[in-house]
Image (tube, rainbow, N blue to C red; front, side, top):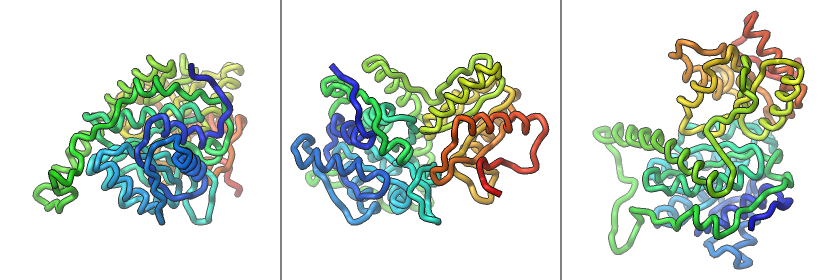
Length: 391
């Protein structure tokens, strides 16, 4: 029977990849994800995980090796962060367009310059258009569960796409939390062996990644978009099955104390747990405030978003990345676009905060909500607000 124990989240993520029977791990170290692949290297060296561990010379090479491994039908895992994810950037498009399933945990970290090893979501937002499924988690248990779910989702023959699991650097990766690792037999029941339907085979040679002329390129990209959109229903199905077997429920947008709330705050990642405490306090003070936690970033959950905000007057969106020269944060921009055609929609107020790992306290979230309510009532000279900046 599975039992809860204190584990560093990075170690637990490595254990989740082991429980999933990863065949190939290809990785290059970068703070703050290094403990994940270090632990996997130990598991392989100790014989606890029967996998090929490929130490490479860069993140670009790590993703290239993952693509090759997935192409021959191996269950493939890697991890990276920040500049490492950016060095992979051009190859990320290949993995998704060629429909090679794999799981990559991204220990979200601010992008340089200046150099920062602390967490925000600038790296995640930089790769939002690469065609990967992207899932955000807020604690270690969610990271473990969604690594396992990620393999099941990506390897489904209706999907065949790579999956990123986003967990905040340091705020999660280096924290020891009480985590329940599932029993191996239960994981085996939930996650069947990977059988890639079109593997590279020397006995049946094929061409992969050939030239796409203008005659066919648009159709290929449209097919890729349709496939990613359809992946949402499979993701929901997998989460439902996971809940039945393990008793932990996941959904594209999760609600916290939203009943009767006229003001909603939307967050992503580990800061959501602090926001929950702030909502508890505001509720105790008699304020009609609730929290939305956006988990499924790609494919974007349009229908679910429209449903959960339909009765709200104000929606305050916290972005942990900034779209320079644009209307603020990428998440807020997409939410505005998603709700634009709705006849009844809340006033949407965008905040950018927590950049480069800067903390947002419970009182900080309360301040953000109060300022958002004020802007909704009186307006603002700016397209968005940045929280906590020193003048």
